[in-house]
Length: 198
Image 1: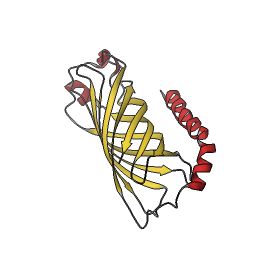
Image 2: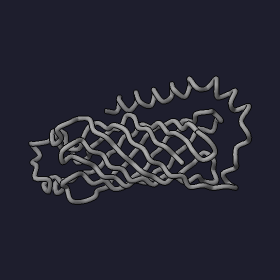
Image 3: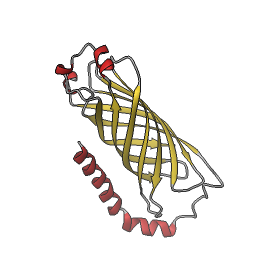
Image 4: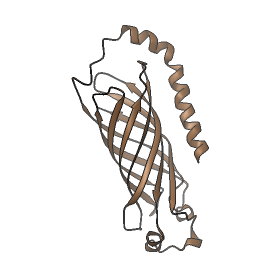
């Protein structure tokens, strides 16, 4: 899975590079940016995409599912830094799903391109279906922010999530270690999602 995440990041980087020539012209014509230290803002995100590698492997009937998420994103006095609080739900069909509440920091490119690449990383609490509890986890990702106006944007994003599923949580699912691809740390990958920000 790490190589798939790397491929997704490279694809986003190539998309950003393809937009650079137009970005230079648009940047020259664009009005001055609003100083975020003067006008801090909280944006609302809603989006979704497809996700791979369901928790506990053979526990799922499908290896590809969907993800839906909502988030609040805060622009800080440092124009390149933002904070995001997010709630997400992923499903692979049947009784296999993952619920996540995470907090992440986003680092935006300092260059004034029309489409701005960014990286994100954070952590939070994750619950695998039928385990009956939330456990710790982390998330990393990369994306491309395409502004549509002063307060709106489209985000194209790729994410990886890692989350802990202890032996006790596994027993609560009614599954045995021999029945699934068990590792205390499980990983799910969202290679592509589209997020509307306003």
